[in-house]
Image (tube, rainbow, N blue to C red):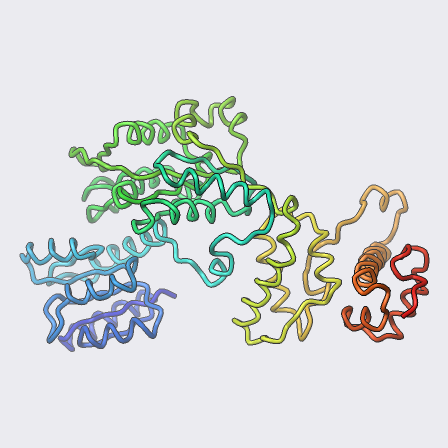
Length: 456
């Protein structure tokens, strides 16, 4: 549920606005002063601020400026007296998303409010707690470190970069890494998912639009190319963009000029472009889905993010990091992995890459009691399906075989690390000494020389 903060010193109007917004399904906080509004913003998660300009003490524009220090992307609507054009202009320059001239009808407020909130979601996606867990680059894999070295090198200049790789490999993380190591690091980074926005709206998001340009365009709107003119625009799923829009964007990037939808004025823009796709560019070009001239424009430098199965040395430390994060959120600070669970994580193919690992660990933390066991992971074990089909095993037999193999590998690894010390190995595996002896006898030769016949 979206939360609206209403800052209005007129009690009657404040109550009326609260009533209207609550009737539309919003959660509402209402205060009579900017000072109280600032305090509330720091303690509550607010989706949008609706504030009057004329307030006792700090006025609405002062409030905008203070809010922008700590919450630069928070949508903000300012209410001004009818005809106060200078105040409205000053408010927009100070960071207001839009303004409303009093008096106004609720039917006029709600569409503007919805548009401002939705626009903010598209171009300034809030980083959720889940994404914060993987924010920044985390790796010990040589393949990824090589990509990062290339990213740091290309970050020094404004050349367009195309990031290739399977879904969930961390292409947006890499794009942010480039931005943060560039001279534009203190300027806006705006991510736009080209596959999640309808084509008719995507043009408006790129170039902006003027009031009345199309149905629902109740106010003029700045596009992302203009908003990030001194920063970086990340075009995710760029392969899903229509060829017609590719032509328009290509021209804008070549000429460094845009024109808002429904407008006539040429606006100079100089954003740095980083694009990403999980599609084969050769196939996209051959089928006409990707224009060759547009491809060459955005792919001056191409970097390829390796899938998680090719950076297995990152799986265990990344899983441990995620476990601590989600366990802290859910009040399970003492939660740890069963050794078999870590073995399964390392042996899994990860078709969904880092995103899938993140979801698996979050689910495991939710399901686990004191230890994350294999059943808590909710993933299919890696098996030789062809051999299983030939053997015509039942599902319980398949599960038993997979569990047996995982136990054998875990015991072999731990016994090798302890030099055959079974007491220490049992402690590391989280089982009793007697249970370990029984397992060693049961698996016999399958343990090889890692400790099947070793004594303490």
